[in-house]
Image 1 (cartoon, each protein chain N blue to C red):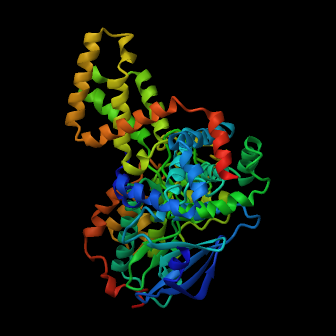
Image 2: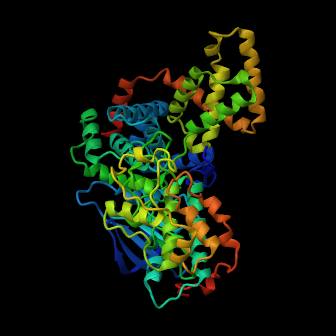
Image 3: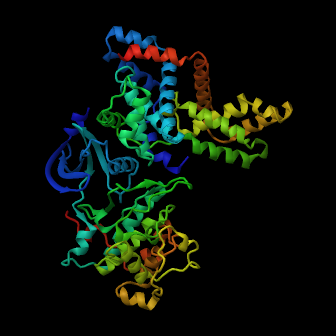
Length: 280
Length: 310
């Protein structure tokens, strides 16, 4: 992580506790009438999050936007929904706007017309031809973010921690395949609230833990199981000595496991239909 | 929520208009503190918030330093973003041009020290300013110098990411940018600071090129024509001219003549900041430890600096 995370707006203004986050979300429910609230509450919140994640990635792929920028867009979306509840505003428009703003902030600006027409070709029922819709939503989004736009991600921490692991003990050098797996887990972590609740290095450590310890079968292909076991022990020693908050990291691991458990029962088609009912 | 933020400030008088913003002065109601409100203009075709505005807001929300302009608040009113900034009535360009004011050695040193400290902080946060010039170094009512205008600033990119070389106002543009380098470093800002240093000593711009080609010639005339040997890779930079005029590097004697009031340590820092090869150029961190800043005369105290209004 860059030295400047510690003085960043992310740490000073957008690092929440679980309690504050829960309170904020509860407070948002008041704006709905009881009937609508019931429809929204019937949705599996994990599934909604997975659905939004796939929307962002679909738009991102069609515009060949890098993962890092999409990660920024996802954090914007998560932050936005701590101020404006899901169901209050057209989610397709917010997704397109979050990607549009993230591209600008990450110095790969896309023209508002490009974003509009690409989003419209994907979701013609929800996105109009008119680019001013995204321009208006941009103001709204930036305002709800408190105009704090710089986002720190765990990708850099992953590289730094894996370097430190290799230096401390050659036995726990991460294999390229493990780095790859951890990287994708970090991509998935944006579906969760982890980026509102933890600094990036904790999220990185949690994903590394999951890869090295819980998915140690990756290494079992090339290593006898005794060696895998002693490798896990060596990793736990490293972890223990690293001064990274153990409890917080394990909390993250649990959150990631909940995500994967819920993902198993996710159906995109069903989710799309259910969400359509909420937003019409 | 935004009406509440807006109500905290008054907007009294329009004081300036740029390409992407209109600036007003006003007051923070509660404290009676003078402030400036920079209202971002709406794009002509409603193209969304301008990149310069995005950059300025994004970086100023992360930087807190005595020598960088303070962003106090941001609010939206209608479809417009407004930035509430600290009130900085004077800038270095105005002081340089005001022939009634005499600059003492300690004054120049105080301004250079404050500018280098502010820039060092930006570089420490991995932020390139990319538009340093006397006009963007503002002076507070108490005489403090503050770096402003982050409309061209950007985060230092990953090593493989290209950047645009068309940044920095021409007279303050580093040679690597003049040659179209797509990969560059914080050294581009240090070059600008070096040119500002020269301008503070001479009260005239040191390399006032009339166009991009003339800028290269004036730069070589002032600092000498670099060779491939001094700067490996130089001649393969994208916009390196096919033919260049060869000028010798100025000797110490020559520099002493050009900057007659400067001390040897002052000239040494100036030279270090304006090394043609960016790899040889001094960093802000190193510059701050230069003997120039500790030798006599001391940097002038804020209360005795020209340009303060309180």
